[in-house]
Length: 173
Image (cartoon, rainbow, N blue to C red):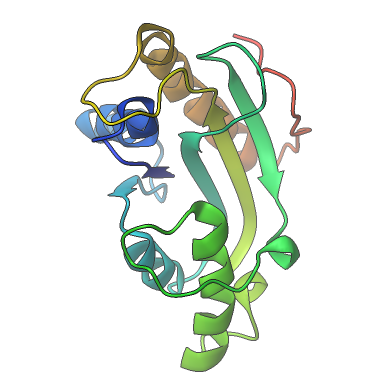
């Protein structure tokens, strides 16, 4: 699980906050499940993914026109990732995955992103405020604990070999 976002832009720090909560409770997730807070270090994430992962669960803000604090579970299809220009401090998850495709080929880690990451899921939270500022808005802060629980549910299902539908509508709380 990787938390993504800029903690200096209000709700954009959501992914980092979820990662911080999970890292504070290392016994919360099963062995073999890694938690990483990359913040805005997209290049770091792309290089880390070259180690190979069955599933990447990205936690980030996601605009879906729902109410602030709404959570969504989406699937990202690696073949849709556009090639990214190198910007190590401003890379969106799509740009990171696009960069990963070229890095995998260039480093011999595989023929492309799909060879180093089997599946990419996104647990997104509808933001209320992405303007510069510290701290999450009230509705997004209220969604953090539910997002931590949702990460646990997703991991449990994946480890049990149970599939599930990802969807654009709000994840039931």
